[in-house]
Length: 151
Image 1 (cartoon, rainbow, N blue to C red):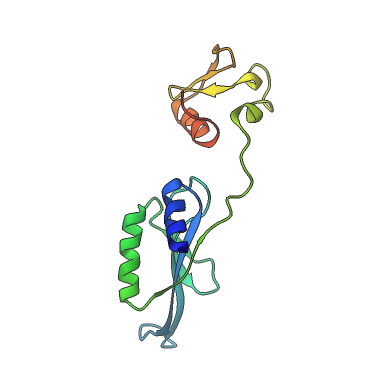
Image 2 (tube, one colour; image 1 turned 45 degrees about the vertical axis):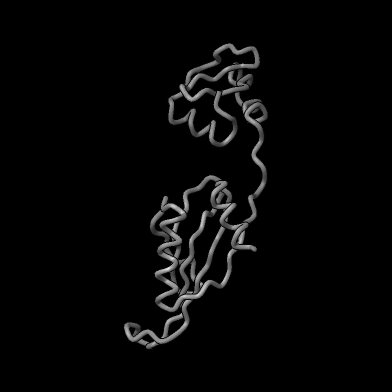
């Protein structure tokens, strides 16, 4: 059942991790033995899905940042065919909730402290619908994603 919760979290943009491990013979290794992991993860809310791998106990390295969940699960199937086994699947702590856009804007100098809504075109509006300022579209999109629904 936990794997269903992880897949749901992945589709909702929530942080998760599905971890695979391999311990066994590896003739390419000097010692002839491997103890390593490979995992599919989204480390934080809204972050892209990525693959992390490395020696067990290490922080490892990241590749395939921005991979789709379907593509990552396809790679996971190929890992299990090579002897990896799924050792954990978990939804990670979401961390502290972000403040609303209005709460966030209160910390800005006037007139920006009155921003109540941000539109996808970059317009930042106060509660009366008056334009407070115009933001670059990329910055507006980031704020919308983090704090407010698009209008």
